[in-house]
Image (cartoon, rainbow, N blue to C red):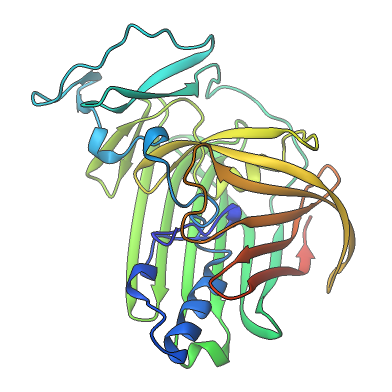
Length: 337
């Protein structure tokens, strides 16, 4: 993860591929720095929700098919994959590793002309969170839909998630992260994604453009990957899951593209609880986002999210295990919902 998500964050949400590999717990100061980075990225590093991608279930940029006009062709040095296996009805077989002929299945029944009517969220919604590590306030985060913009002629929700470390934590590990997505206002899928991470001395920027007419995603104007229809990014996935019906004991699956990888994101519905926060008391449905496969939260442990048990499914509490203890993001204020 820290490569990272911050998820689901964004919600998901909230992780980002960053410099955690460079942080090692070699002293008390280093430990505090890692905690600071994790806590503020809980809502910005939306990779933490989906970190530790399983090799057998991810399509990485190394497996990208070259695009020649509108035709996909295998590179000359790649072996042609075995296509004898038939994909399940309504699913497309995407090559996961051209040389090893691995595949994963993604839903191709969706159309970019779909219309999903929902009042789970709307223009003007803003969620404010306080991030704590034990009794210490580590930072704050916001998730908001401030405007509607047109992307490729289509109206899109402009979703913005920001996280910043508190004054105390900023003294030794300053975080100022911003993640943005553009979500089709009718079909509720991602057209554009960008993240700007400022964490200590670490700096990272990423831009992803999706062309749903050609079914491709282009990262930083150079890396191209074939994608199924109506794919989500780590931020829009968090909003999209709010529109889905949920049943305790069951899972929902969301096709997602993040950090040059394509994977099916599983969200488990764990149960129902009534919780108290600084913004009030809420009846909640409890979910746990993860990837299908064995390598679940290899580096960051479990992420659990409490969402209001109503048609809005507003995230009011998020808890992520870290090296020592847990980091909690608690709703502080709900505006425009």
